[in-house]
Length: 253
Image (cartoon, rainbow, N blue to C red; front, side, top):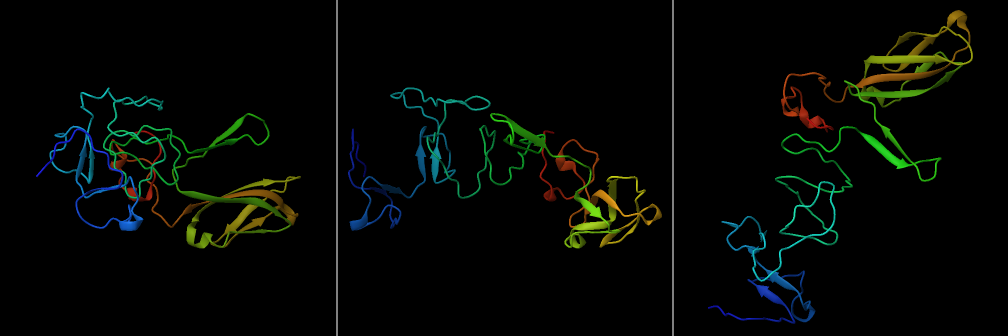
């Protein structure tokens, strides 16, 4: 049985289906103006969805009594009016968000955005952009260096010593056979050389045994992941011959 009504005003609750709904309250604690529908629900053009695509299915607005929908505002690549859904405040997605076409947004992300299925990425460079530390109303942007290998480094100054010890955690992180060392003497020509090195230390030697005072940079390749294959045959990142799950690519194919 169905009823055809011109207008319906419900001051309490609207329920479609059966079941207890804690979110809207029941009995003495019910929330007036609330509603519960078991679904599936179609809003908009009735025939747009041939089957239930979700609990809530939002289709284009084709109601001839309504003016055409229009969402004001500006996005980096323009608006895609008319929209089937517009949210005018914050929105939360507590599961996966799958987008079949494009995401257009002025976006601040906590976490990682990888790429779409066609291989388009958000950024060609990895950088930070902060208020300038010494100039008012200026900003400072630095871009991360890039290399064909997954390197880590340690730097510092060695004074009156002939050894440079690696951080303790390097034993599990760095392949010590890949280590390279740059030394810059301070104050005088000391002819400092790397005499030898092992998995724990760099051993230095100066001409005539004179005291050593120098800056150092030590680089080594990570051993806790597979080695990067810098060049490979293919037309997209999916052709990479190694394990792509270890990488977060940046840039546009």
